[in-house]
Amino acid sequence: MTLLSVKNVTKRFGGLLANDSISFDVPEKSVFAVIGPNGAGKTTLFNTISGFFPPSDGTIRFDGADITGVAQRKIAARGLVRTYQLVQLFKDLTVAENVQVGFHLVTKGAIGAALLRPRWVRQQEARVRDEARALLGFVGLGAQAEARADTLPYGQQRLLEVARALAARPKLLLLDEPAAGLNTGETQALAETILRIREAGITVLLIEHDMSLVMQIAQRIVVLDFGKKIAEGAPEEIKAHPDVIAAYLGTEAAHA
Image (cartoon, rainbow, N blue to C red; front, side):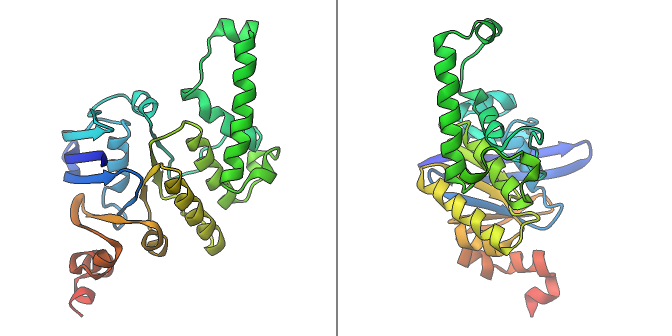
């Protein structure tokens, strides 16, 4: 079953055509990758899908509903949650507190409740603390729960961002270059985490430059170049596709 459907999505910034009539469908409970050279329009596409800005043309459907032009917060509340290229943590908070922040979309609260702290608020806070610890264990950071976020190595900060995104209970998790800056061991830990996320029933859509990671975890791949979709298929098909080889290595290498 299709969870996300992108149909003829175009994004213009004045005279710049960043995305040109891009279409693809993301099946439920899959890992789906969007790849392409720098400047191919990948992050623009993610920003459009997640509601950061509306498309200039085309439609986006998520979980059976049209979300074209819907505000980012409302899209996130429906279960489409994303991370960003740059790590965005609350560095003065502990690791566990950072994950607890991620529950804001799925918890209730108001100023009066915060001041009076009725029983249901205290119960909710206890549940959030327990679930945050469970998510940290899920991504392999259980032992770091009380550490300050800014003391974690960069690879663990990336995993912390994933845990915080999972706190919002996504149906679809968008990961924007999650392996950027990671070493080989950290990348493998990330790959294992993403596969566990899929096994938990959550669909993953990622942008990534690390081709070894993409080929290891993705069931299907879309390739962008200069804002256009130039290929789509399984990893083995993409590796052998002449247009993909040309985009990454140049036309002469593709002919060779």
